[in-house]
Length: 302
Image 1 (cartoon, helix red, strand yellow):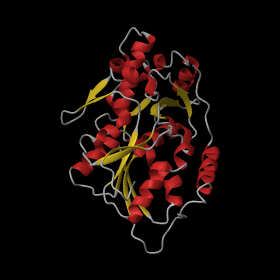
Image 2 (tube, rainbow, N blue to C red):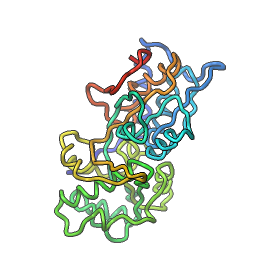
Image 3 (cartoon, helix red, strand yellow):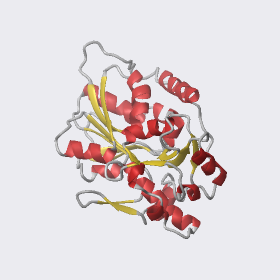
Image 4 (spheres, one colour):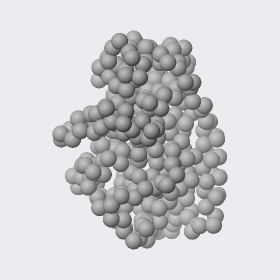
C-alpha cells in the first residue's frame, strides 16, 4: 500500500469556498450577526480548523469555540464544569459514557495516519521504510509524538493501531508495548506545532489533520487505520481502560455531536455543523446516510 496523496492547503480552502458557495439556495448564513449572542461549542481538537475556517464563515451567529481532547472535553461537560450549546467529539461512544444525552448524531469519519517531516533523519527513515515497514524506525530512535489516551480518543486509537499492526504484519515484538513512551505524549492542540517546529519527527494524527496542515503522511492499511467499517470486527479486538473504569474498544472512527440547548439559532448552527460540505473539504469522511441520529431527537433538529 502506498502513501496517500496529499492535498495542499490551497486545495482545502478552495474546497471550503466551493462548499459554502453551494449553499446559496439554503438559508443564508454569514459570519457575524449584529449583537446576536454566540453559539457555544465544545469540540474535539481535530475539528478545530474545520470549525474555525469552514463552519464559522457560514453562520450568521458568532461562535464561541473551546477545543479539547474529546475524552477530557466529555468529562468537563459531564462534571458540570462546562455548559456549551453544542458538544462535538471525535468518538461517538463518549455519548454513552461519561456523557449520556437523550440523543446525538454521528456525522463524520476519519482515519489514523502517520505524519512525518521528510526533512529530518527520522522522517527520512520512515519514508524509506514505507509502505510495509514503517513501524521499524519507530522502534529505534525516531522522535515520535502522540496524544494522551486518558484524555483524547486519538491517543487510545494510536494504541489500537499499533496493536492491530502487530497482528497485521506478524511482528516479532508487540508494537503497542515496544513503541509508546511517556515522553511522546502531547496535548492534541499542541501535537501539530511540535511536528512543525521540529520538536518531533513524526506523529500519529487523523487524516483530516494531515490534509489540513499539508503534512507528508503515510496512509496505513484499512485493516489497521480504524477508518473502514468493513474491519469493525478486527478493530474491536483492541481496547483501552479509561480513568474511572470504563473500557473503550476499537471501532471505526465516528465523530458525534449533540445539541444541549435547543433553540432556533443553536439548531441552525448544529444542522450546518453536522451536514455542511466543509467537512469533506477539511479531510473528513462523510459516508452515505450521514448524519445518523440515535435517541430521542428533538423536533427543532428533525
